[in-house]
Image 1: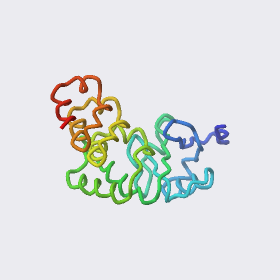
Image 2: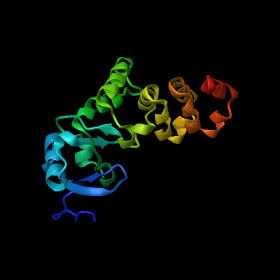
Image 3: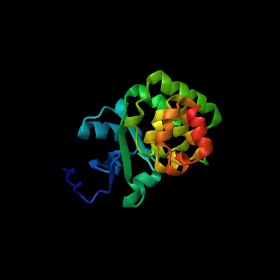
Image 4: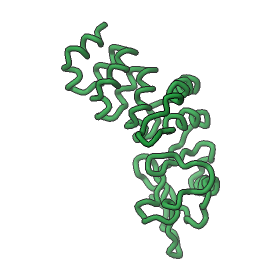
Amino acid sequence: PPPPPLAGGSDPIRVVLPDGELVCEVPARAAAVLHTLCASIEEQVGVPPDQQRLLWGGSPLAAGALPSGLLRGPPEMREVRLLRVEPSWHKALDLCVACNGAGELHAASLATFTAACREVSVCVEDLDQELLRNRDFVMAAVRESGSTLRLASEELRGDREVVLAALQETGMALMFASDALRADRDIVTIAVR
């Protein structure tokens, strides 16, 4: 069952799981910095801070002061997603969300991210759906294992470049491509090579 609402009319920060399920609420006044928010989550939910990855608006919260929009914004802006991750995954996750304004990984980070994924054996199935809609993250994942295309968003399974990257790793990835790309003669030819 969801936690009871906070008393005293306080505007809380809602902490939800990737599927939107509410797991706890933290008074904004008690969580002005990330480490106090993480400590409150640990106290209420039992997830240690080193296993927490908190996303706000699709981006990870950085150490230090929390964004003013999260602390003082309207109720719909006062929600963070809690991903529970192995501490060793933080490096790979940090790199996959190290995006510039265009939503792309910095070129220098992509190779490092790919190596980090390999190094920590990131289990893509356990990652948040937002990450599976991130084109650069999916590109790095399918280059390491073409079959991870099955987990990508529908839009990315229809992205020619993403599918080609998956097919270069394994032709079997074709079965996870969109109908349109599975009907594309050039794509099928590449898959059977």
